[in-house]
Amino acid sequence: MTKPVKREYFTRGRGFLSSTGPQARFILFLIFLLIAYTFLIMIFRKLAKIVDLPVFIPIALTALVAFIGIAGTLYSHRFVGPMVRIRKALEQVARGDCAVTLRLRDSDDPMLKDLVRTIGSLCEHSRHAHRSVREAAHGLFTDLAALEESIAKGVQGDSLEKQLAAVHQRQAALEKAIQSLGT
Image (cartoon, rainbow, N blue to C red; front, side, top):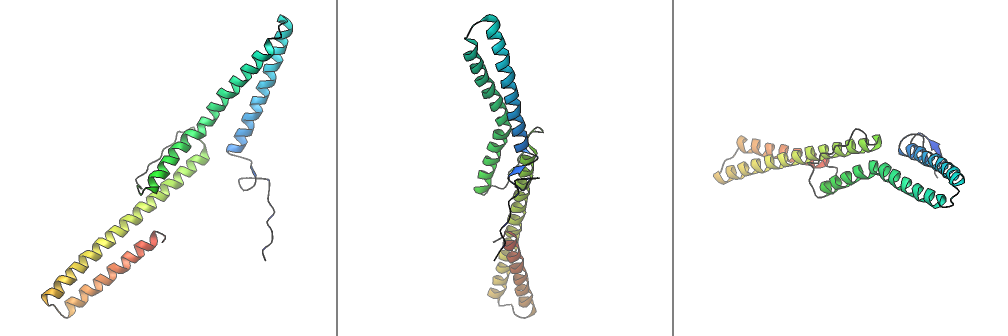
């Protein structure tokens, strides 16, 4: 029986809240919005008293909504743009096209850059494994064709045994290449 794991709520990257990364930046962004909202309300209240127009409160709320909309769009664009490119690249990989190259801007989130590097490594490994399988299969078919030709000609003895050993080596190489695919 396993012991229940106590969940840490604030750790560096393993708990519910991360002390670094996108969560911390988003929390700072929200704090900035609240401070900006507070100053905006204070300014519009003072203007409303000076000018004595109660119209300033709806104007303040409209300005706040516009500010939050623009700031939120600019902030979320830093994540949405790269995520769209990553999704398209993963769709390519799912279709079997491992010739995917992903590049992010220097200003993009480091976690997204790590994800892109991991996807690149996955694609490179997959390309290498597929190339190994293709080469091993081609070599096996070539050796089998030579063996069939030798049998058809009636060759016997050491030559036939050498060709059969080469076929077994190619078979082992193909099995190893298939295992490198993770299947």
